Structure formats: C-alpha cells, structure tokens
Amino acid sequence: MEWKNMINALDNARKQMKKACTLSQSCSLDMNEFEILSHPKRIIELSIPVRMDDGKVKSFQWFRSQHNNARGPFKGGIRFHQDVTRDEVKALSMWMSFKCSVIDIPLGWGKGWVIVNPKELSVWELERLSRAYVRWLYKYIGSGQDVPAPDVNTTPQIMAWMMDEYSLLTGQYNPWAFTGKPLTSGGSQWRGTATAQWGVYVLQKVLELNNDSLKWKKIAIQWAWNAGLVMAELLVELGATVIWISDSRGWITNTSGIDIGKISMLKSQRKSVIDYEDATQLWAKEVLELDCDILIPAALENQISKENTDNIKAQYILELANWPVTSDADEVLFDKWIQVIPDILANAWGVMVSYFEQVQNDANFYWEAPEVDAKLFKKITQAATDVFEIAKEHNTYLRNWAYIIAMKRIFDAMKDRGQV
Image (cartoon, rainbow, N blue to C red):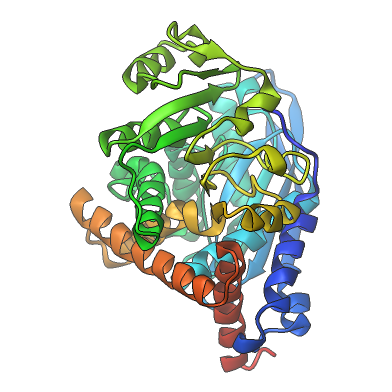
C-alpha cells in the first residue's frame, strides 16, 4: 500500500479555496464567496436494497453531493468503493466544480458514492446494484439536472446498465443521462487515452511557457496502472526517461531508465513492477524524495505534505491524482522554486471528455478520435496558458490562480443569475 498522510480532504479543499480568496482582491473575490462555495448545494444520502444471488436482501449506503450548478447542470462520477466519508464526497464535488470552471466548460459538478467492494459481487449482483442506484436517483438526474459518469470501480458497462435503466424509467432512449458509456451505447472516442494525453498536453504547455521541454527529463511516476502507465509510455516517446515507477506492491528505480514496454507486459500478465529485473526496490518513504526532474503522483491523496517537502528534489510536480499535495506543502514548494501543476488543471480530462460525450449525444452526431483529441488539446493549452501567465504576473503558485479563475467564473454566473 502507498504511504500517505491522513489529512481531511474537505479541510484541505477549503484551505486551498481560502488562500485563493485571500490573494484575489483584484478579482473581487472575498470571504463571502468562500463561504458560499465551500458548501455543496445539496447532499442526498440513501440506503439502496439489492437482492443478492442467494436470495437475501442487502442494503448499500449511497451518497450524492451536488455542489454548484450556476454554470450548468451537475456533472459527476459515481464511485463503488468500501471506504468513504461524507467529507470526502463533499470535497470531491467541490474540486470537480472547480475543474469544470478552470477549463471553462458549462457544467457544475456533483459526486456519487456507493459503499461497496464490487469485487465481492457477482456480475448479476453488480448489475442489480447499478440499476437500483438509478431507480432511487432518476428523479434527480437528467441532461438538465445532473449527469453521472464513471469513477473508481465503475466501468463503461456499469454506465450502460444505468443509462438503460434510466431510459426504461423515463420511457425514451436517453444516452445523454450518463457519460463514460461504451461506444455502442453513445460513448465518445478517445476516452481511454484522454487521461494520460491530457496530462501530457498540460505538462508540455507549462514546460513550454517556462522555456523548457520534456527532452532528457527524468520522470518519477507513482502508480503504474491505467493513466500513470499510459502517460509513462507517452513521455518516453517524447524523449523523457522514466527512472522510478510504483504499483500497489512496491517501488522500483533505475537511474539509467526503466523499459516501460516491459512494465506494460508485466502488468498485462497481472504481475507487479517489483518483478522487473533491472531495477532497485525502494522503501515507501524514499520514493517521493528521489532526485528527478518531474514527479507525477498518480495514485493517492496527501502524498506530499510539510513532513516531506524539504526532501522533495523534483523541479515540477504534475498532480495526476486528486489532491496529492496538501495545502500547507504548496507554500514550501513554491519557496523552493518547485512548480506544482494542480490537479484541477492536470487531471480534468474526464469531465472534458464527458462534456464532449454529452454534446455528441444531444446532437446524435459522433466525432472521430482525432477530432476529440484536437478539441482536448485546444482546451487544455488555453486553460494552462491562462493559469500560468496570470500566476506569473502575480508571483504566486499555479494552484492559487487556478482556484481564483474557477471561483470567479462560478460566482460571476451566480451574480448574473441573481443567486447572490
């Protein structure tokens, strides 16, 4: 298991928001805006009964946090996971609102969570749980209200079941009620690649704005699975060298470079990075402190805090995971001239592709993968440029200005609508 500090997610999110408000007199943000945006508009909490294969009925606790819809309908992932708190669901819904806003798409955000370990369910139990979720939720969702999407442990197949159940309940085919669906059910091209590609685009743009490039950069990536592994492959193609990589079983390093093709092969065989022969294994607390150019935490939250910032040697940190750098650590890293590319900018790929999927569903006209990729590139490079240039002008770190831009856009929409 990856090492992390146990810091309340909601407290961390609110600290980041408060810092942005404190620094943003020029944008007319103040503590009133902080007070309004630091709470979700609504939290729904229910118990969902589902009949198991053995005939017994089991109840599953379910949360849905709907943060803000001033700029558009709520939009948010559904997690199936056994570990959750109300504060974490609130924090995730807030972060996702800011993601939508900083990349400038007309959506608000929500977040859903069912307390369940899906590995303990059969396929039929998983389908019944997914459909039951929709039966309890469908009055609160739809293209003008709240459009759920996949998240941890929820797959395109689950989204297809949910969309089908919603269509049965409403009496018409409604592909726009859920995103992250398979292509056969109205999904979008490029979704599987977009996670890592978005991260590469934003990293390239920030490096370019710093008159720098990926060539010869030494990369450390936490979590060799899905986004992290695909990103490693893309970065190597662009001339970087991966010198450290990890998964749930361990951490390895080779300062001369790790063969990502071999790592991909090991993972496809359900093996671990520790089965890679030409590398040295590390202890958990060593891994984030290696000498590298770019550190990419792509796994868990609270990985970098005041406890270990003094030992961080990377020049850049790209937050591919949600909130891997704590609010207190931001200032220390900034003083050390370490540039953190914040999660609300670096991993906003999911909501962007989901938004593209909604647009295609509404039009009943679907784009090819190159067109989706081109739209992704245009959006992320513009958002990264906006955040970087204004942060540089005001001599503050990127997260602060990303939050300022996001919060101002949301609050301006609320004022224009007469909500405040």
